[in-house]
Length: 368
Ligand code: PMP
Image (cartoon, rainbow, N blue to C red; front, side, top):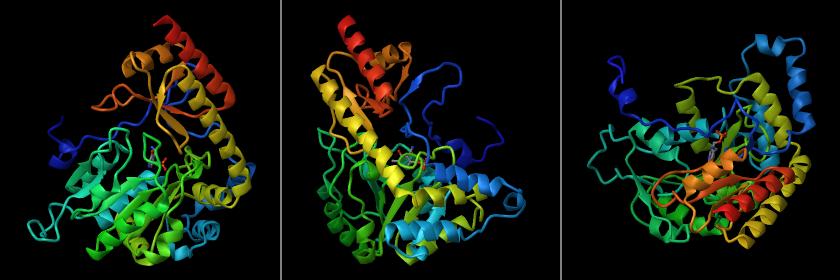
């Protein structure tokens, strides 16, 4: 606390990202990074930008046209339907600011003013953005098995945001399940955001439905499926009016959120689908093998379409299992909250990483 903080800075509870260990050589299965390197074409594109330094001397293109054209090409949309950002966290922050109403707004008390909705167990940055912008929110309980019941969202709302697959559970819904919700919200001029951070690992994208739903925004990251967490590249796809809304907020904040290296590397990655399909198939195969091995050991494993597994072992607390794995040099993620305290989220690494993880689990179980 400081007397110099205004009430906003004093009142927020910032998001705490997963640990990036510096000290020890840990097998890092805690922040859903891709275990495989980015495409060599990404490295060449970045090296080309660096050679000569001219692209560093100049400001990058504020419209990010080449990058947006590459995304448009890869996803079958127009560049004007693509919003570029410094990682999808930033895109999400702008989306909350552009589409969800703040309680400081004069609409309070009017029929147009309602809380936004998202699941009780989901990406823990959503309540942080809501708090930052002063947006009222309401969480909707997942079922006992951690599945989302979209019927529960058919209530008046200021907007809805849901990741598909959900994080940290990994459970996914078919894209068509969201269409009724999109239509309901459209009737009330409200936006549905589907966070597709993990869709490339086996879920269905909503992008083909964007043409029919002007209030549907999909948000994408290159951190996981494109092995570029360090470059900070994300984007949204939606109707031109939604994209224009995002630019209005961005350009009231910083016109150059993506630097020259991120623009070049991101474009090269998005255009190299075959490479990424290959490495992500390896991640999916490792996920399935790991899930089966864990079940054999008596773990409960939530069915996952993401590059992580959400697991629990009856009889061992999440905190104890987290610490025992850490002692064996394996770092996973523990969300010490109601309903998730006995679960761990395990990012899928290389086959060697997963063998080491499974061996550690076996040793811990035999001992306990
Ligand atoms: N959405 C979800 C559901 C995530 O888990 C993450 C990663 N923490 C993000 C968005 C943000 O990813 P990035 O900012 O690296 O693009």
